[in-house]
Image (tube, rainbow, N blue to C red; front, side, top):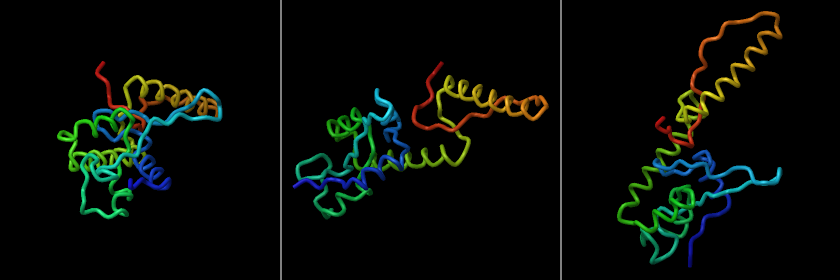
Length: 164
């Protein structure tokens, strides 16, 4: 019998990493808009760190059913990385996956709690210009023109910086 995650645990896994793949070399956003205004597309997977059933990758016989179903045994990945970790088990050990998860949760927290940014430079530039325009419009509306300093990097965490 397979020990699947509950819907609540799946939501927790994806939300705690900001809906991004936990693989530090990927960090792909796993949710986005669908074609219709009221739809979304989810390409994320709640994967088991140790297998959900006997014979699966990284199966740990010492875990209880409850342990295998818990968020402690889960990691949020995109579909490509979910397949990768189960196809190359020697490289993707339990310790490696736990480290990925820990780092992804920390990255998501930093993104909402600080101005630290790992957003691609082009996106930072666009968001900075948009915010600066809004700030200038607010200043003009108040009857004065304020000189502004360059905008700081804005928070973001899904995509890793790309070399320019």
